[in-house]
Image (cartoon, rainbow, N blue to C red; front, side, top):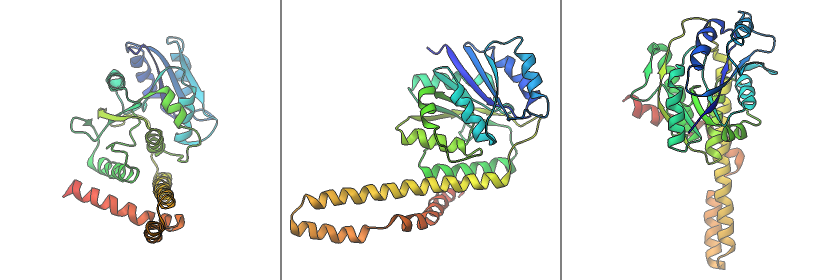
Length: 293
């Protein structure tokens, strides 16, 4: 049974949302530690003042001023600072805290390492117009296909984690923006962790401003592509090494045949990387075609 949880929320310029969200979190049936991560110099909308007022009524409510910059840094610093065995992450504006127990129950029942609140499952309740929804869905299809995650909503920030798993996974992250959510899942998967997703509610923003920007999102996308290509290079190297071992243990004639096959297969790492984009586009094209035809 889960009794104590840490809740991590990036809160740059989210004063109005935090004032409503925090009291609802403390109504949950857990001992709660809340970690609100603000920008280094403090939000310009009075978020710090709102948190200071809330701390008079709620214990274990902490405001962290991040040492670095960007959403990814805020999330990582919050995750590292969490003290409980189970950690929930969420947005200040889009997610419903009353659904946190559902995530945690799934995490416990299935002995999972992360459970994602997904916007793209059949029973998800998403309050978002198609112009915003469709690009997000397409981006997630690309990420899932390239990294073989088998998750429909790789970028959702509404998650429950085993603390030991996620805290081990977040060292030396490469992404700097919202794609950190994708990279964390890839790290957990590569470490042998169990990933699950369940439907969730996703609300449209009513106050504050969206932090989404095209340029850093594009740069993060390129980092995700590089991660996927690096995985393929490592797979190829592993295959080559296996063939070398098999060839070494066989007779001369068989070894000769194996060497011929080996020469046919051997592709240098640089060549694989050069083909990465082409392979990636092909994978996505098929996924996209199946989805919308």
